[in-house]
Amino acid sequence: MIAQGNAISHGARAIEYSMEKDKARLVKVNGLPENIEPLAMWSRMMQHQHQCMKDRYNPKPITLNALRFEISPAKEESAGWTMKDWQDLADEFITVLDGIDKRPGKSDCRFRPTNIKNSQYVVSLHTDSKSGIPHLHIVANRIDNTGKTNDAHYIGERAVHTANIINKKRGWVQSAQRRNENIRQISEDCFTILKAMPKFDWTTYCQMLSAKGYDIKLTKDDKGVVKGYAIRKGNSIYKSSILGKSRKLMLSKIKATWAELHASDKQTPVQSKEADAQTRVHINKEMMPQSKPSIHHYSITVDGEQFEVDIPDMVKSVFTEELRNSEEANQTNVLKVATLLFAGYLDAATSMSSSCGGGGSPGDGWGKDKNEDERNWAIRCAKMTKWLCKPIKRGRSR
Image (cartoon, rainbow, N blue to C red; front, side, top):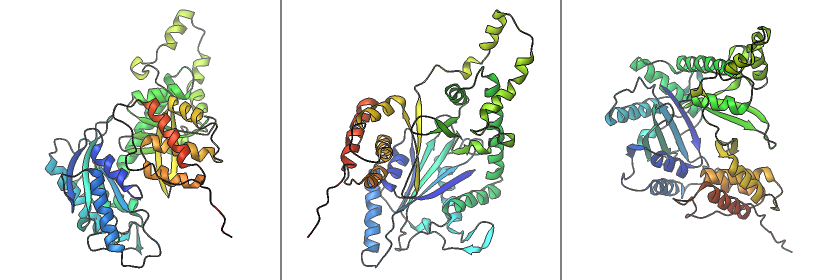
């Protein structure tokens, strides 16, 4: 089992995603009614925070107002589980997490333990669309029911340590071992794909990885040049810099690695045109799905939180056209605001718009219509972005 944890500022979006993603199932709630909408749950959490902090002087108000955890046992570890089994795992995870009061591996680094068990929280069950691996999402209030703040120092390390304690107790594979196995498997598949490619290009590389069940995230600059990539397996993301022996799969080495794998091909005798043609189509058809629209990946950091967003090439073209003649100075941030709006990260988009000199909010009714296609939704996001990022005129008092 592996686990992730972090403090976030977009609790409303996290609860909505947790409960309304396709085929999501509610596992349990704590301190909240079960029969209300996700945003109503978040509203109650915020109301509790305001009540607890109303009469207390607080020079640094909480901006990261929720804790989010993702818990993913291996597929074989959760085979045949009932909803009761998932509830038990959630309870066990929270109990163990609340008992950790020092940084794993550093006994001299101590902190206040969390009190998630006595906080408002929501637990839901998702199933990864590609790997089929079920996993839990937990979103908890930063303020517990006694009015105290749940400490978030090293919360990611605490989540990993909690998973390792449970793994040892249940006889499951430790997260470090699972991670090493995943890195080895991904590396082997990448080398196999490179060997099968008649020439290296990112589109084919991404398509063949996708056919293997992986998600590949390309990082590009404003000119569309690839500057880095990472591969997602199940619920874990692995940077290219840790893949392959001697880091041969990282961005700066991958083309040389492809050439090295094909060096022996150049030394073979010249084949007939027919044989050469057969060699070129030797690539497994199952690994070469029909061409898909180009995808642009963005890693956007807002208020210390990183958002990984993919948008189709058509949407990028709409943004480029609609925002081309805008008067905003920072075009890069304007594009990021539009991208966040398109992906549904409303709080993050609103926050980033202030860095462009703008302000305001789309309002409670903003969102994609049920039957709206992506192009119309992209156009509306671009127009809303221009409004959000329009500099506020500030008068000078005399």
